[in-house]
Structures are given as structure tokens and as C-alpha cells.
Image 1 (cartoon, rainbow, N blue to C red):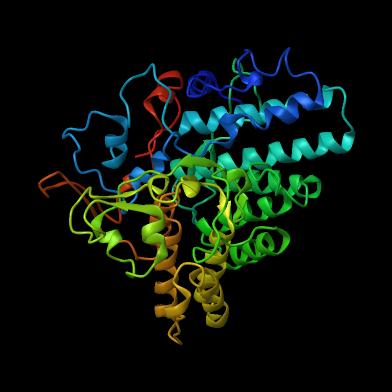
Image 2: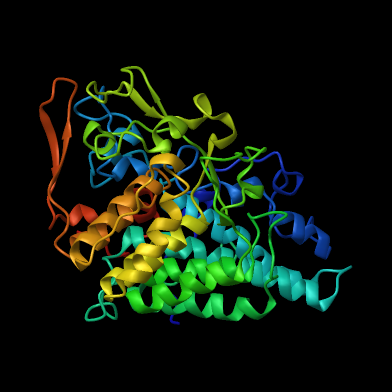
Length: 456
């Protein structure tokens, strides 16, 4: 690909986002003198930076969602989180800070690229192990580009994907090197698929000992997400089922024994894990969509109004204060997510029996056994609506709601979303056709790359 004069300094800014207790990340420059053995590279893939969920430390992508409330917001907004919450074009005017989202993803990509460009010269490991670690790095890089293309590009549309701009595809870890221009949406999707397809033969069959690391099921789950948000529902269903069938994840039953560890890395329902502390303030409208006997309410939410959901800011998504063992949220892929992908794709494709079966397999683990009643319908639209509602309840604050809003607006299923101040006045509105559904390239990036095209 033809190189441009875009500077790589935005990646330096991105790396400023992270600090780590991991000994492999305390010494700079990365990937030069310290990483000499295959074991060094293996430990590199365990770095805290790589296992932390999107929008660290608290999954800032949640601020964009229609189920998130920020009652005491200042107007005009002054904090980064407030600017995200109001869907402002830019989240910080300061040029000397790392850009939210963009900087985080490219910093992680830089770490994965360090493995890919250096491990062939490492000592002390077999070729099989080297291939496996390269496969994990390819999968991790693909996962970060999944976020970038769904944040900074228009939602995938086959008719325009070859012309719509996405993000630069960077394969070097040299922060002094020039980077390519923004690839198209179609090109980024192709790069992601190529990386995962190249990784699949060398990924392990089982990552149960550390679900932050890659596996074949992890790869299929990332592909399922990719196709799902491209609205290619047949392929999404196929790959989600592969992730279910080839993985060893199992459902957590809220009626039975809960996990004994709060670590996402060993949680049984995780397929490809990333961790953030569970903390968000839900809207009253969102909380009132739950059935009163849904066990998720008193497992994940702390309430100061007796779970009446009549007072703003009185309810928090804060499992650490209710069931501490579930205090950390997985922003990576999971078994419930894959089941919901299969259920929605099946409903859209007219296979209501399959859709209802996966819906039931989730809900049996979320409602009391003695009064659980499966949802039954022969109406495709009602089944789809029920699956969408279940998706909202099961995956509320793991960073996916924003992507779901982008996807659903293409179906005409997203109404206008409003933001309110403390006294209930509307201070911002996101219309279904708003340009704000695609994030602008951060000013910090454009400062070093003035010729890079900006999103509207």
C-alpha cells in the first residue's frame, strides 16, 4: 500500500494511556532489548494493557449508549466522560493528552505488532510455540481493529464499504515510521478476516486456564461479532455457532452456585475475555424494562430506592456491591453473547424454533426456576423484539450497546435519544440520522496528520 506522510506520533500518544506492573512494560523502547526469548513474548501477551477492556478504566463506550444516565452533568460539558455522553464531535480539546479510544486501540495494536515483527528472532522456543503466539497476536490485533472500524467508520454497508473511509491499518511497531492513510471499511474488514483466518490453524483448542488468551473458539467469536455488526446475519450465525461448539464455555446459572473467583480470566461463560470493573448508572427507562423477578436485577444492580426505579441516580450497575464475585465485567466475547447472536440471526432468518431455544437457554439461568415461563410466539417480529430485549438485559454495560444502536438505526429501529440535566431538561439529542453515530478522528491525531481526512 502506498505510504503517506502521516506521522506515527499518535501511537506514542496512545501508549501514554497505559501503565503496567508487568515487568515487560516498564522498560522502553518496547520490543528491542528486553524481548529476546519466546517466553518473553509469551509473557508480553499477558500484559495488563492487553487484557483490560475497551475504554479503560470503566468502559467509556458505555457513555454513548441510550441506557446510560449522567444526572449531575455540567453544561457545557467539561470532562471527557461528559463530552462522550453528549456525543460531542471531540472528547478533549487538549492536544497533549492521548485521544480516547483511538489511542487505546493503537497502543494495543502496537503491542501485538511487537510480537508479530520480533518473535521469529526469539530464542528458546519451538516453531510450534512461535506460530501459536503469532496466531494470538494476529487475533488480538484483529480484535482491536474491530473496535476501530466500528467507532471511526460508517456502519458497514456493502454498497459503500469500498469507498467509505475507516482507519489506518498499521502493521509496524516502529513509532518513527510513517503510517498508511485511512483504509476503506471494506479493506479493514478484509484485513481483520485475513488476520483471523491466518491465526486459526495455530490457535489452541482450549483457553480455559486463561480466557484472556486466544483459542479457536475465540477467533470464531470475534468473526461472529464482525459479521454481526456488518449485518451479515447468516455468516454471524454460522460463526457464533462455531464459537459455541468448539469452545468450552458454560453458562453461569444465577439460580445455582456462582463462580468462586472474580477473575474474568477464569469465568466459565467467557470465550475471549477483557476485564473492566462493573460500574454504570442506568436510565430509569432501561431499568423499567426488566421483569420484576429477573435475578439479574439484584445480582448486578445496587438500588437506593428499594428497586422501585423511580428516582434517577438511585440505581447503579455495581455488582461489586451486590455479588462481589461478579464485580468485574467482561467486554470480550462470551457464551451468552454468542447465543444471542444465533438467536437474533435465526429470528431474522425465520428459524423461530432455533431462536426461541437459545433465548430459553439463557433465560432459564436468569429467572427463578419455580415460576419461569419460556417465551413462546409464532410471530417473527415479536420473537425478534424479545431477543433484542434480552440482548439489552444480558449485555448492558460491556461496550456493545453503542454498536447495537448503530446497527439497529440501519433497520429503522432506533428512535431519537435524549440527554437530560438534573432537573429533566433536554440538553442533547441524538437523531437516528445523526453524523455523531460515527466518531470524529481525534484532534490529537489530526494535529500530527493535518492531511488526514476528517469524518463529518
